[in-house]
Image (cartoon, rainbow, N blue to C red; front, side, top):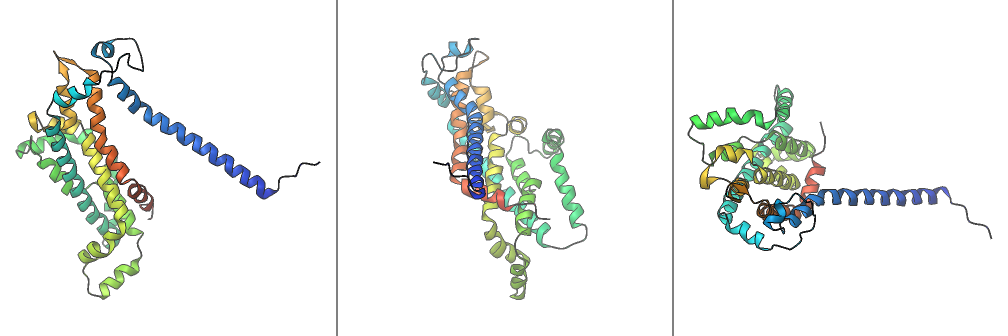
Length: 287
């Protein structure tokens, strides 16, 4: 009995299946790499103080110390700092999304001399490291009496973000011109075109901008450590300074607090995951 020969189409299908299997294996491996620090942190949070201070490396805790999670919530005013950080991140995310959407709409749909060089110059500012602008910004806000207040985050949000402007500009540039021309014939102004016609069509980009801005402020440590002090600071700074005993940082309690610290961001991402991926995909590289 002879073995049937593989046709060209069968070979292509077999190669495609092998390619998908290799891709899935690579994705699983990458997922494990990215999840490894989170799993290690959760296991470290269960270690006792003596075990966490030991130089011996043990991945699994010898005895689970569940009290570390209670201490993480009680050693500092965890609820108050969480509300403060959530408020700052939420205000900044909403303001920077609104302002960036307006600027992106202007770059994408309005015509004017110097529009492209100005857009290129704005994008070039994304290459400047943030740490270089912290000291000049601090001096300016100090002279204005805005240090140790939440006004800097409001002003930063109103000033828009070059990266978020880029996302909205690409999204608006991909929409048909016929929508705008028909609205102008009906007597609509540019703000009404922006608000009622074009903005609802880029909702995935809005969700992407809000998620990115929220996580940026939520995970920021340097800026609130410099601009805020005392009880006005954010959760990350309070955790770094509050989980100590006799000047020694309690790393196991800090790890337990970190578990709570990342939960809001994870919940936000999983809730808006579909919109986030669509927003990244729809803000392509249209010229």
